[in-house]
Structure formats: structure tokens, C-alpha cells
Image (cartoon, rainbow, N blue to C red; front, side, top):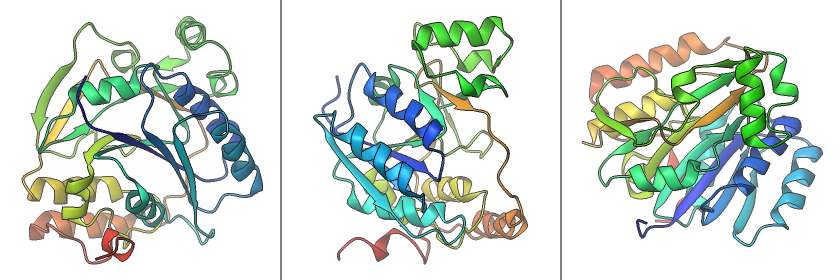
Length: 266
């Protein structure tokens, strides 16, 4: 097993019923992360109480990082979590996405210096989000398959060997399943906090990583996770975020102005 430490950062906002299933999935990992940081974009008391109770059950470090609810500010809370992380390698997971029991061990196995890893997800369709993740993982996945509630079968089952390939495009970039070396996040200044509202902040980070000669290592058949259906977030700001992304793509930007360095001591 590779000899580097792993921080798992889970971002959330007022979805304690989903987060409880994600935390159960983290607790069932075959290889535990060295620490779990909850990047909370302003959730209310139930989320804080849920994470505090879950944290007491674990021997590894757990920390709740919270900011006031002033709208969708995912980039900002993720930067604060990155700044407080203590591991060499950071894996990002969304608070509505349940990890496969070998999620962390797979990320450790496929991680490669000077690359960032993009994993993929299967989709749990509407209706199944109520029960998927409550019972035994294998049973719930089987039930989802036979009831037609499991979409993206190529990402739903672990393959005998991981298939990895280097990619330099943005297709399929999603922050719900990313593995990035902490040093590379510092070099690019983490997430760009000019991105407010849903959309494109993960793709823009990927642009800066690739501009810093940190290409994408796309992995299939390993590092699996399962996204629970929920009503879509507001896309009201996506036009502005699209413009920011296009600007980064056209200017060979390597370091964003409003980013991680605000929270890391010089």
C-alpha cells in the first residue's frame, strides 16, 4: 500500500438525511482515511449534531468546518477545508454521494505523483434515494439494479483491474470524486472563489492544474461512488460561471487571485 496520508473532504449543505448515509459509507471503508473534514456551506444544527455524534465513533481525526449561509459558496468552504487538512493527498466527495467500501483504498492505489485523479459515479434514481445507503451496501445496490433505479452501470461495479488513462479535456470533470495532491492545490491556489452559485468551479480548477503540468488521470472500474437523486440546484449563476471558465481556458491561467492562500499562513 502506498505510504502517504489521505484526507477525505466531504462538502455538504442542509442534507443531513443524505449525509448520514455518506458517513455510514465512510465508516465502512476497508481502508480508513487519516482524517475526515466536513466542508459545510452553512448548514443548520441537525448537520452539526449528526457529524459530532458520528465523529465520536471514529479513531481518526474528524473536523467540522462551517461558514455562514450566504448562498452557494462551495469554493470558499472547500478552500477553508483544504487549508486545515494535514495529509499529503486529498480526496473530495459530495455529501449526497455514497462511497463504495473500497473507495479510499482505490484512490490510494491509483494516485500518481504529478497527476490528479478523476473518479466517476453511478446514479441512484428518484425514489431509491430514500432507502439506498440505509441497509447493507451490497443488498442496496442489488435492489437498485433489479428495480431499475441504478443508472451508469459501468461506474457501479468494481472491475478486477482499474483502467486509467491520461486525459487533458474537461469532459466528465466532477468534484464529487476527485483526488489531488495537497501541494498541487497550493501551487494552483485551490478553488477560485469568484465562482459563486452552482457550476463550473471544479472544471476551472482542472484547467489550472493542467496548465501547471498536472494532467488528469481518469480512472474507470475503481474509486466508485453513488450519487443520490435530489432536486437540481438553482442554475441562476451558471452563465457568469461559464464566462469565468472560458476566461481561464483562454488565458493559460495557473494561479487564481481569490483562492486558498487567504487561509494558509505564509
